[in-house]
Length: 289
Image 1: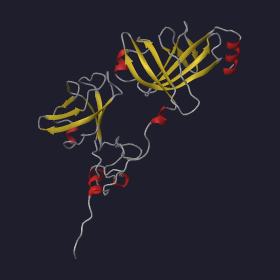
Image 2 (image 1 turned 90 degrees about the vertical axis):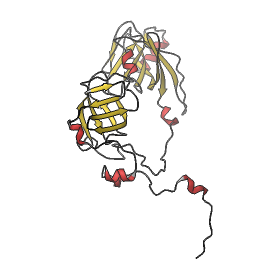
Image 3 (image 1 turned 135 degrees about the vertical axis):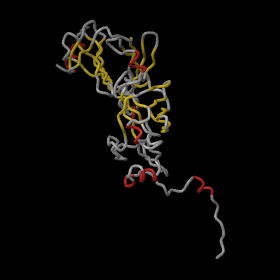
Image 4 (image 1 turned 45 degrees about the horizontal axis):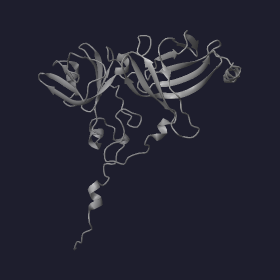
């Protein structure tokens, strides 16, 4: 049975239809929801009843316009929890919605494919913007010509292997002050890295309540009293002493840093000799030989 079978059933006045939703987070974890009163299973996912997710009217276009709709749901332990939404674990999650004949789930058709946009929590519930597959077409494309490197350190354009021991370390947090300040006692392995080595780098959380999240490093100071690593902003889940993190080297995107710190000048993606903006205002001058 297929979409054709479902349309035939709808044409016959059948009322045994419901909607099913599958969410796949960026970490690969999948969730299934249905507005039917019983659980349904297909495509390797169990769609749980009573989880309170539904959608408003879906506007779909035949051109390159962005499909536009909104999903609403209730927070629950079986579905989307407030803590997971607050931590951003569902940001950008892939969404697929089906219209399904619950008496024969093999008779179904896809109504929507896309991803979660902005999520807003309310009193015991949430609303989420749904972005269609054409949404990325509205994003700016192209390359900027700048003196500094346009790559992100460690990405496919940069090609630096941040997993190497030279550029990072896995370590347990010893003290967390507020949401942004991480402190390490002197004498540890992390002291083997130079002062400010991790500045503009990344802290990735490996376990604990914030596992899977990461933050950008604002400052990295090594002194005789220990090492302080400050994040630009707190993560969306709490950090605690004993949580293991991986801290990787930062890059200020200058050619000198690419050559001296990473030995990667061949992959430098900037234009260090490009004229600055003041060059446009320079007036011609006369010179005598």
